[in-house]
Amino acid sequence: MSDFQIAVIGGGPAGYVAAIRAAQLGFSTVCIEKSPTLGGTCLNVGCIPSKALLASSEHFHMAGHRFREHGILTGELRLDLGTMMKRKDGVVSRLTKGIDFLFKKNKIERKLGTARLLDGRTIEITAPDTRQTLTADHIILAAGSVPVELPFMKFDGKQIVDSTGALAFDQVPETLLVIGAGAIGLELGSVWARLGAKVTVLEFLPRVAAGMDPDVSATLQKTFERQGLIFHLSTKVQAAKSGKNGVTVTAVKEAVEHTFNAEKVLVAVGRRPCTEDLGLDRAGITLTDKGRVKIDEHWRTSAPNIYAIGDLVGGPMLAHKAEDEGVAVAEVIAGKPGHVNYACIPNVIYTSPEAASVGATEEALKAEGTPYRVAKFNFNTNGRALAADTAEGFVKLLAHEKNDRLLGAHIVASNASELIAEAVLLMEFGGSAEDLARTVHAHPTMSEGLKEAALGIDGRMIHG
Image (cartoon, rainbow, N blue to C red):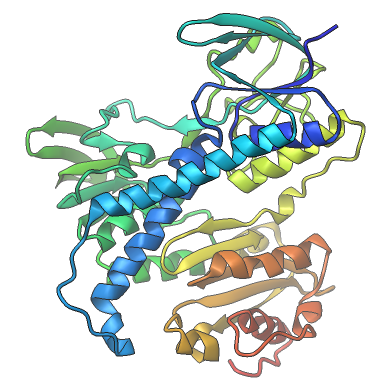
């Protein structure tokens, strides 16, 4: 008889949610996490602390640049970075303690240490002073991911940092060079630019936020440039050298070599799954050609009683995707119809303004030959947006030309991360643009922008 019915390796969004759902379903459950706190990268050194700094830095920026327009006059504006960081850490601590409470509430046993498979049912747990083994009927792999390190630009934690390091600077750098114009690079670049750093972003691809709709990318770039960020696109970084006064980075753009000097360098070129040292070979688990754990449609690996979810497997490396997989895999093990609709996973960049999207981009629809109609509503004619001084941005909707089914939604707005939920829900139920256009929205709200865009699909937008 096994020690547990379900063992979860990893306590991040995928793992802790899987453990909670498994316990709710009546399984004896253990979660093994190598870090002292639960929540994984997202809660400890990712999603949550970055959003705390984004909020604090936006308040600082507003106080210095926008309050006067609202009739709010202040004295000399000063930054207390230590207090800002303390608040960030407090938010993280409160949430990690909340997961501890949920584990106790659901009677989940927690093991601190590094987990490694010895076979298909046995896990070895190594901690600084102990080593133990346990067995489980079912094992869920949720070990997460780590930042990609460029071979010629190793992280030193001081001058060349990953996202974790960029969340913990003890002072605002005079100059910050960001490698990568994806969500992490743009968010953390925005934070330090608002706090006074001169930020330059180098991106290998020809546009920022390359996974987003082209209209979103173009709008974001213009906005960030007005905020002071400098972009060098289609630029390939080739070398870096650290010195007493900072880092010198060499890059090539249009066959011309350029040199960039900065006090700090943030490398944000993506993340890779933590598949090493898990003992996958001992359990007979195979990987895809992209280095992810190979699974079937029920998240089952090549070992029949071992499952994998989150950043270890295919799909976007997003906390909410991982959480849904955590719920679904526990339900599958319980014989229930666990399900994740990968076509309806929203993607968000939490800058100011935010960018959010779900479904297909206009680029993708053109490439696959899908007939569609498009409508775009700009927030500069929206009453709530103007009143709140958040009129920058737009809603863009894409609907099938023949059946009007919503195929994609793309938003740039101060609260795009919240507005996108309406489009996600509509798409989850296979709804049409007409369904959205006929839904009464409170006035004045920015959500009216989605209704206006939906009306625009049929050429009858009222306020645009």
